[in-house]
Image 1 (cartoon, helix red, strand yellow):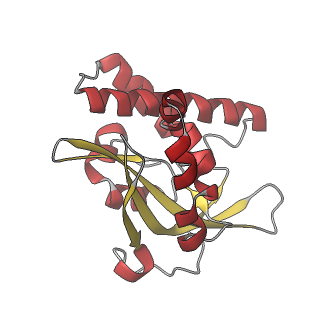
Image 2 (cartoon, helix red, strand yellow; image 1 turned 90 degrees about the vertical axis):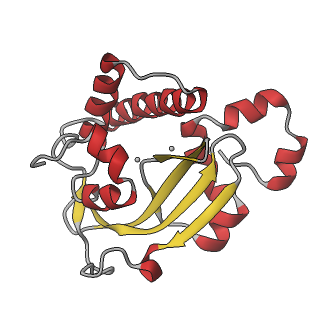
Length: 197
């Protein structure tokens, strides 16, 4: 499931800070503090796993947002389909596109107010909170490498692809996977080969 400081802060930030905010985990942590998030995205929204995009020689990071709410079952959280998608230029972290998915409606049969699944899912249900956070940290570090490699035009080794695929497969919420595939089909077809999950 990936920092954007306010414009005035970005103007006065130094080079090392600019480099640090480009890290995926930092970006995801700071999103809620940005003016555009506060204007467009409900504060209680969940922030999804990043989706890379290459277009016209540039690399972008696409971030979906989904709804969630507690359930009557202790320790379980209901998940709802992604309702928005924001695309940022990876080099500058400037937002270049906002999509209201409920308006665009790529899933005509979706009932937006109805849960599609729950968290935690089976592959992470046995993990302690600290263990889950560590797994998430490891995946986000792999995302850092992913975006760096894409930006540099570097190749991906089979070993690296396997590590990323294994980590993503474990943490990806199965109930949200079909929606991710619509939003980033090529990426998820490559790293999450279709199978019964």
